[in-house]
Each structure stands twice: as C-alpha cells, then as structure tokens.
Length: 386
Image 1: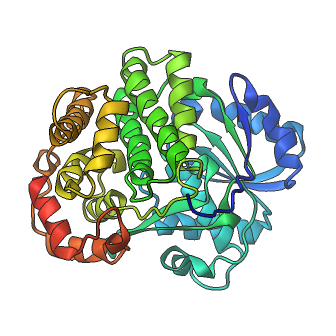
Image 2: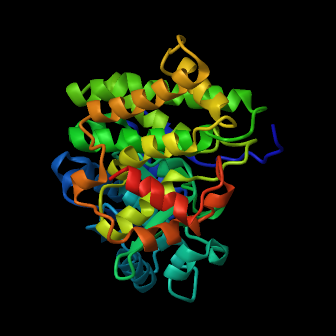
Image 3: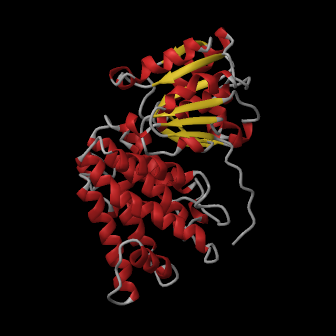
C-alpha cells in the first residue's frame, strides 16, 4: 500500500428529516447563497419549499439558478457566476443530483477567478480559491456530495471534462434517502451503473498491497447488486434507497482509492460519448464497462478479475480464465437486467466520430490505467461495443 493523505472535510447529515439542519448549517457558512437546481422535480416533491423555508427562517438571503442540465453546461456555470457577482453572494447551495452539484462547484471556483470558468474546467490548477459549496442530494449516482470533482460540458466544442480539487469539496451535504423515492427506474438504473463504474475504476488497479481498499470496493459493488433491483421494483424502499445513497458516496470519496495508483479508463471514454451525443452518463458507462473488461483481460490482469468473480459474484468453479470471463458476463447481464442497453447502436451511436473521440479520450491519461490504452485501443473498444 502506498502513502496517502486522507481528508474528507464534508459534514454529512444522513437520514430522514435531515433537511431541518439545512438552515443552521448554511448560516454557519454564509448569510447569502446562490440556490442551484435542475428541473421541476424538487418543486413537485416538496423539497424546494422546505429548502426555502429553512433559508427564510435563518435569515439567509438567496438568489436562484434553475434549469441545470443533466450534463451541466458551461453556459449555466457562467450564468451562476454572473448572478453571484451581481448580488454579492458568498456561498453556493446545490439541491439535486450530481450534475447540479458539479455545476455549483465550478460556479464557486469561477466566482474567485478573473477569467472564463471554462479555463478551470480544462486546467484545475487555475482553481486556487472557491466559495463554500453545500449540497442537498436527490440522486444516488455521482458521489459529488462528498468529493471535489466536477464534470462540465461545452457542447459547442463537443467537449466534456472533469475538474475540481480539495477546494470544491462540499462543506456539508444533506442526504435523505426519502428524496430519492421519486427517482424513475431508468435513472435509478443509470445511477447504479455510475456508482459501480466509480468503484470499478478504483478496484481494477495493479496495486496488490491495498487489500482493505479492494474489500471496500467489493462491498460497494455487492450493495449495488443487492439493492438496485429492489429500489426499481419498490421505489419507496427506504433500506434500498439508503444503501444506494451511501454506496454512491463511498465509491468516490477516497475510501476505496487512497493508497493506490488509480487512473480511470472507462469514464474518459464515456465522456466523449456524452460530449458528442449528450447521452445519460450512466447508460454510456453500462455499455462500455463489459467491453473494456474483456479488452484488458490478460495473464497479468487475470488475478483481479478472479477476485472479482469469486468475491462479488460467488463464482468458484472453473479455471481462472473461466471465472474471470464468467464475472464479466455477469456484469453485462446485471446491467441488462436493470433495463440498460448493451450496445452503442441501441442508443443511436455509430462510428462516425470514433477517431476524434478516441484521440481525446486517450489524451486523458489512459496510458496510466490498469493496462496502458492508446487511441487505437479506444477505437477497438468502441467498435466492440457497437
């Protein structure tokens, strides 16, 4: 296991009725805030009214930025920065899923930067200061409620990049599983694929000495496999929703990755699909993951796939290669059981942009992954997924 520095400064209020802590927690941070949210779901389920009530009771001045997109756009970030500056707001409160929280993070850093916030998306070294960010989570998926990362798109350039750092970690997050009861089955499925993909990116590493981290990862994966079907069949199952919500945070807050070299592979490839086709992130991950697994399986990586097969899926019969391949097939079958597509062609993607998408993805550090991948490798994986 390698050396690491561990710090997750986010205060978490987890469970039923935790929205009652919002006002006091927010006031301790700032008395003026930009309220950021997406569509109308938080108004339909009553969460919006509760948030406004908490802000009003605690004398917190606020302005709103609504309509944040599922793949948040740089235009929304720029508008949020403008509102904050014009109204002298000193914090950002995101109410929603990962897209809303991601948008809030770059708004927070953009307010403290003289240039265009897109500069900070493509180069996180330009994030040297940020307003405090807080979150009220409504979707178990990205883990943005407990990490510093943000993914922002500029569809005018067909670009989607991840950014962020320690400064953009939320100072607190309110996580009430009841606010995910109304999440549709298709979004629950895509969110689960996202959680699992985060975990896979941390799990499939060449570091053999990080035994505990690997067991953490396996626990998160088994939680998703156990509870995603239940959450889809019984949307108001508190147990299922609570376990998925906590799995979302654990998958990417560092607990599964500290002490290892982790260079993500599937996410950079999927970001290109989203940048060109604006698809749901978790859908793209569900499609690509099994094909990436098949592509990187070899004699040197076999050991991890065998552990995955035995410890997550309970596969014990057969040779190492048979166990590894059976585990990959189980992964594909599980995503399909959630109603997720298994081919790019099913969501209208062909090979038209493969060359430029592969070039951009490969430039995102794929050569440092579980096994080194280059442009031609990415094209092959895309083709296999057609």
